[in-house]
Image (cartoon, rainbow, N blue to C red; front, side, top):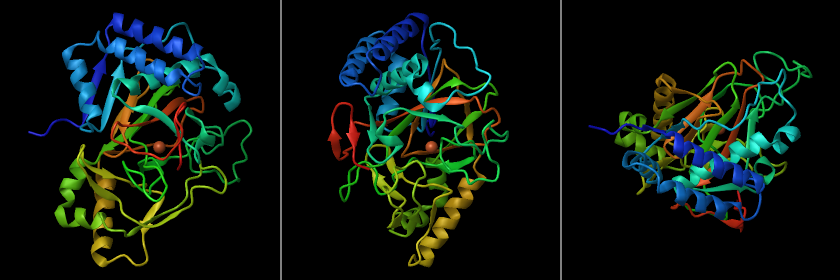
Length: 347
Ligand SMILES: [Fe+2]
C-alpha cells in the first residue's frame, strides 16, 4: 500500500513551550534576516529534537527525505494575545512587528527540524527571507479601502486574487543549480498570523497524478517543451520568462521533481504533439484533482514540498488574512550562493 503524502505533527505542551521560547529567542535576535540567527536556529532545533517521540521524528524524517507532499505542524500556541485588527496594517509596519518576526523565526526553526535551510532569492521578494502573504495590492472579493477596482492587479501573493495550482518559481531547474541559476525552493513553510474566515491553503500532491498520467506522458514532460512567464513578485528587470524548459525530472530523493504553474506555463511553439498531449493530460488531471485544504492559524504551520506538490488558494474573502512564508532548501539542494548568512542565492 502507498504511504500517505501528508503527515501531521503535533507537539505536546512541554515541546510547544520549548518551541515558543526558542522562536522568541530567534525573534529577539532579529529573526531570519539577521546574521547569526540560522546557526542559532540549528542549535535550538537540535535541542528540541532530543525531546521528540519516535513517531514525531519519523514524520520529520519522511519530509526531510522528500517522501511527503506536506507536513502539517500543530499545537504551537503563541505567547500573549494578538487581536485581529479592523484592517490589515501596511506591509512595512507588519514586517517590523514582533509577532511576524516570531512566526518567521518559528518557521525557520521548523525548517531546521527537517534539516532545511531558510533562504531568499536575490531576484524575488526584494531579497528578503520572510514573505508576508496578504492582500496589500487589491483583487480580493472585497475591495481594500484604498483600492481602484479598475486598475490592473499583479498576480502574486501580495494581492487578493485566486492563485491557481503552482509550484514556487524559479522554474529553470530543481535541486541542482543550472546555467548560473539556483534551483526552485525545495519547500515553503506557511503559518498564519490572522485568518479570520478560516480560508484554506490548498495542496495537490503530484505523485498520484504522475502515476495516472502513465509512463509515456510522464516521459514527455521531461522534454524541453514548455514556456513560462515572469513572476510578478520578482525584482524589476530580473527573473525573465523562460522558454523551452522541462517540467519533470527524475530525482533520487523522492523519485521525481516537478515545476509547474497553472497561470504561467504554456506549450512551447516547437513542442512535439507527444509533449502537447502529455501537457493536456497533465492539466486535465490537475483540474480534476480534489485539493487538500489546510486552514492555517497562529498555532499551526504547513511545510510544503515544492518538488512534489502544487499549492494554491481561492480569492481572498477577508482582507485581514495574513500568512508568513519562508523558503527552504533541503540538504540535497545545490544553489548558487551569494551570501551564506543569511543565505541569499542567485535566482
Ligand atoms: Fe505560491
